[in-house]
Image (cartoon, rainbow, N blue to C red; front, side):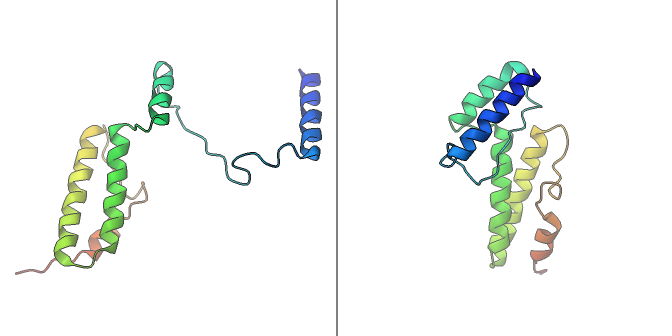
Length: 125
């Protein structure tokens, strides 16, 4: 096994010197590793096929909607629109909580929920 490793390493070094790796797609970009450790072995292939086809699980779709709602809320100026957006965000978080066995923690997911709530000012009548 050690000899095989040395041969492989030598060939890789030779290829690098000859420039065989210079025009590879994604050169200079970080590698993206997919964490599929929570997916059962018998479902990994099906999940990969669905992902490659552009389909994502409903939980991830809702998480994406929450991120979009947060981004929109941060950029809204009108009070009524902000209130509606906070209401929408609360509905999405409730929906996510119903899908999961544990509640959504927006701060852990880098959604700064407290900051959002602080930005929303509702006039008292």
